[in-house]
Image (cartoon, rainbow, N blue to C red):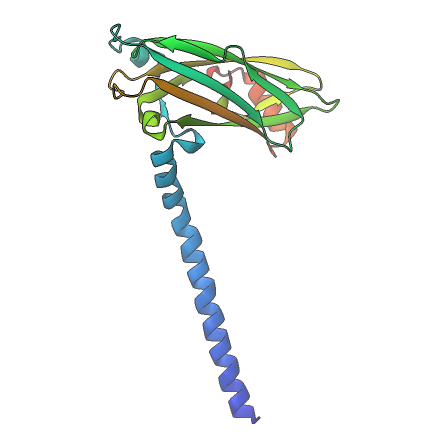
Length: 195
């Protein structure tokens, strides 16, 4: 093969590789809004509403109907914690502020930090389910062997379609890679969102 042919082939290869790299970057950039749309449609990743306490308390309560809210707790395989709801289900009137508690325990001899990721089912219910307080709003540091009580306050919007009578709120705790010093600052600040 001649030098000119080799240079031409090399330029063509570089051009194709550059095009592939630009395409991959563009696809990666487009994944963020696509993921947000997917979460909005499915209720995955906690794409529920977040409401301040005053707005939640000002909501008109629909005492003519009941909605059962079920609670599910999971821990990813990489996090050696136990995690459970205090109650498996409660009944609420749409519009009333309700509260429940979850418990997490670090079963190791090493301090750790976890982050809970919520999801709501059925997916349509996600836009009618808002939280005023949740441990999922921030990372949760747990000392070795520590048991932590974590409240969740929520409200089911009275505009929830009448055919939805049961909502499942599920959380999965994952290990956080946040540095321990930052997690300790979050713990000592005692923000209301930290649960």
